[in-house]
Length: 130
Image (cartoon, rainbow, N blue to C red; front, side):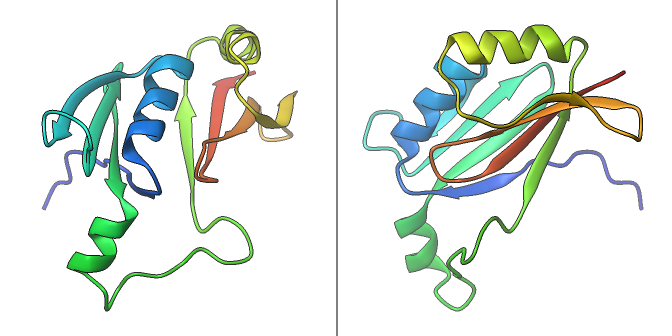
């Protein structure tokens, strides 16, 4: 069986707030919302083939209470997005006021990376080959 795609599905406190962050700060494009007008319970964003889904926390808890878990003591997951020019991207995000929690640096494994945090505490690592 061949897998064809992976789309992170993030649980967020406020879909509209997260949608604004991903489109205005990170340069993603909105391609789907449910419903079509606010208040949203779901949204999908895309940039260069990278998709991310945003799900309203209250909706997920009400639909699947048996699997709903709070994040505690830090982050449960990160996203790792490779890009062509991580230096330029880091400068762009800094200019837009994106919170960078780990500054741009070259790692011992040959990747140049920086880490941001979104409004719900999800960590996103952006990287290029050094």
